[in-house]
Image (cartoon, rainbow, N blue to C red; front, side):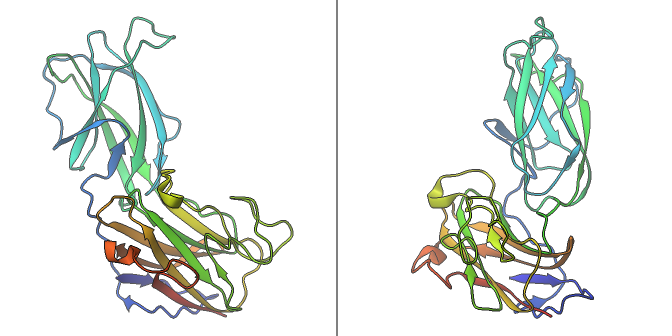
Length: 295
């Protein structure tokens, strides 16, 4: 496991992991994932005289690592049976079948896709290349959509501890605060548990926003946050990652990040293996990711 620690005037961090600056490597080959589409290795061919993409509709060009379920739609030239989606530099492209004509252009086939991005997607600008294809498999001229990968804004709070992972597995974030109180899926806040995803009214304690992929009911989020909205106690915080179940996956890579006043001040990454699913999964379970001293 490798960790990265960033200095802060407000925080003194003691990280129980090697203090080397490095980025985690993902075992997955594709930065882009498209739900229900066929992944074809390599980049798509150049224009082969096939039909063209007529229009592309996407709400925002900014994306973030680990983002799920980003909608995209558009129309294709007559004769198109599918559309290819390729993120430049990626290891493969996706084939999305054409759908029924759009109401605004009843003579043109339409397409719709739900995009997801790897948690390890490097930040920076990208070009998404779309090409229509016909029944014979001929690719048409490329149309492009510019994207910008940037950090996802953390939830609002003076201290936010975030766990995200890159496969459909059930991982759990455990945070033990200086008082010894542990926040996790079975104790989502301090004195009183809030409704799912809602902070306890009037409390200053931290809370868990969601138990993602609980019991392998996959929600696609693959992220959990412990949020301290107004105050965070000074002292030692221990952060653990418990591999409750891999849900049929062979492994899952994860990353923990700590945010103070909107700035990332520490992170750690690791890998969940099948052996880690054995044993107890209660209080204190999991792999120690970070040990922080907050003055």
